[in-house]
Image 1 (tube, rainbow, N blue to C red):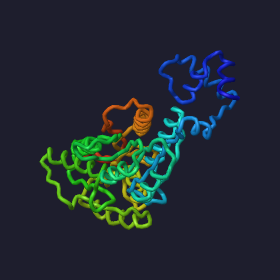
Image 2: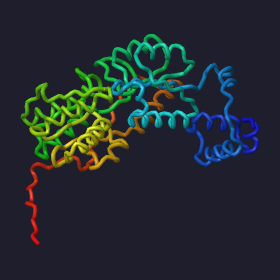
Image 3: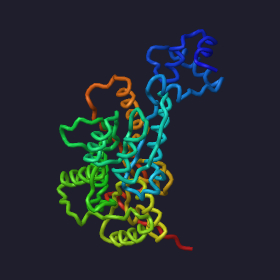
Amino acid sequence: MTIKEIAEALDVSTATVSNVIHGHLEKMSPETAQMVREKLEEYQYIPNMGARMLAKGASRIIGVITNYPNREEKYALQDPFVSEMIGGLENAIRSRGYYMMLRAAQNAPEIQQIAQTWNADGLIVMGLQANQCRELHAATGKHMIFIDCYFDPGDKFNNIGLDDFGGMYKMTKHLLKKGHTKIVFVGDQPELWGVDAQRLKGHIAALKEAGIAWDSSRYFMISKDRKRRSEDFARLAERISHDTAFMFISDYYAAEAMNYLTDQGFRIPEDISITGFDDNILSHMVRPRLTTVRQDVAQKAEIAVKKIDDLLIGNAKEPVDIRLTTSITWGKSVKNLKAKQIPSMKTTR
């Protein structure tokens, strides 16, 4: 069934049907939009992409490229944060009448090659360093939105990110309030950059406010290679005798560590307190429930797609660098060292 036939059946204009298909609903009532959607679903209408590209010179394709480097590349899409982000992007892209092409790239040159060869109207790119983002934008000339990139002051790029500094600052304050001063910050790079560097800065700032000096011995690096991480967790466990809390840069690593330590007979939080960052499905599944920094991944995805759509239809003004807020999700993986310990009661028979 064609758009014209659907419009005639509903006694509306073809423009109205087309606007619903493309997600442009600003000038119609919710009732009309729903009526058209139901008719499209009834007849299982599928837009002819080839005809659309020829008629408009546009593909209606938004390319999504991910290069989050804090996991092994072959497992990148298994990361709950990455998969949740991709799911949110796909839903938002589809709801606006576009189609998504996805690639989990291994390096910046591959991303640049993809960006130049894909017939995509616009690109959403995740997980690059600032210099890589600049090079990609200059090489392609396509409309582009970056996610989780930290640019230099004065740079004019569209980026949707998070208050990573504030998130880890809040979590560190929470640990300090519970009496923790011997805290280990756990990451997966010799020198942290991007979101992880900002999280470390937030941690250090909270310590400084509390009069606690930071030094590099408080940073513990684990491997990106999952086959080697059990060895890393074994070395980390050796610190439990003199440290009281491990702060992980992600729920992914925190959950892995909790499982390893539990298998080795350590109790959480009695022997060691653990925190994460993201509040994804893993933080809900581990026991005890993980105390973690929450970010709204679906909101980040929705804003990114809204901004790329604004660029494509000419509604965008100045480039924006949006930093979404965070909050703490209270689990049971942190021990309150200031709480009075109640002696255990022994019974005799």
